[in-house]
Length: 377
Ligand SMILES: NC(=O)c1ccc[n+]([C@@H]2O[C@H](COP(=O)([O-])OP(=O)(O)OC[C@H]3O[C@@H](n4cnc5c(N)ncnc54)[C@H](O)[C@@H]3O)[C@@H](O)[C@H]2O)c1
Image (tube, rainbow, N blue to C red; front, side, top):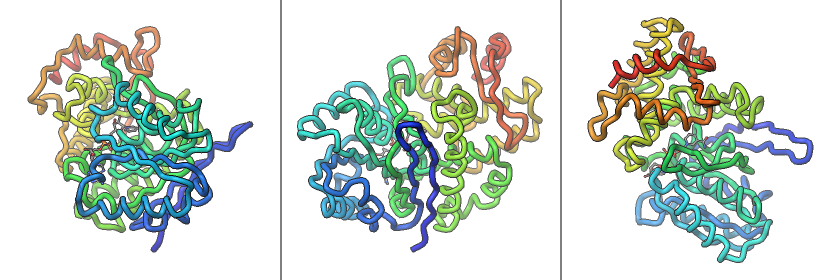
């Protein structure tokens, strides 16, 4: 069984926040040895997606994982939470916190998140505030969470006013991305995760983007070799960026390519599943490229090539494809005010000079933006 290990180096004066991301096929069967040094003789709370509570082909993987953790820890308690962004809110957070406290935890207790980005984000936030902060481990089970949300320590929940507005930075002790667990992922969810994969090529690695174009069919056929290479590459790119800028004071914002538009689109949908995060990001990235082209930064040919890979991946590429809820320009502009990159009502967008070269554009001209969105809706 071969496995890649990417080390995220975050050395602090007081605490070393570095951690490994284990990527491979069937590596959850080795969870006891991979996680031993973090959880041995400790109380563990596993916050898991309720998908794994039901009888399904992957339930055994989860049950076996729990047994492995039980074999080396002091105790294991489970908290089941449903996936989907509707779950990522303050009510659910309070519920989990109270449940966790009822298990008589102490500050040595370790939270283990077992699920997609929603479970990882909320469980990480729980860990960051429980008893003023305890450790956590992330076991991402969706493509999106394996390539993106499990790495980098952003945790939190959504607010009625916008996406991920309540949260903290809290790095995990370790991440295990097991490709095998993706087999039961609905096609729509796998494609949505692929939107974030494309993002990495667009931000800073044109060779990776070229490779994705070539390997599209193998990737959607779940070929192990391509999946492992792809997930490893994404984690490596993200690790390189966050090692230099953990708290997003600079270039970490590049990872937000397409997300200012995307988060606004998601909040129009009230997180009810009509449009899911990766789909909103797909539209957002296409909009960022069209806006880059309209603003004179990138060529039309590059923008078209980007739209084309999303189309081939059967992802939405335009607001016009969203049928179930209405979006208007003034409300969309209003939503940008809650974007975490906005300062004094001045908007910042991640734009591209070309494929593989994103940059941070501060103080974007609002009239220009209004004209652009008017054309898009
Ligand atoms: N923290 C970060 O840096 C960061 C980065 C990107 C995205 N995010 C967040 O991640 C969230 C999206 O993550 P997601 O796409 O993983 O969503 P998700 O966690 O809601 O999972 C998507 C769906 O897949 C199901 N599921 C999970 N694992 C499965 C499996 N192995 N087999 C079958 N079904 C499975 C879930 O029950 C859910 O219905 C958003 O809230 C987004 O804001 C966070």
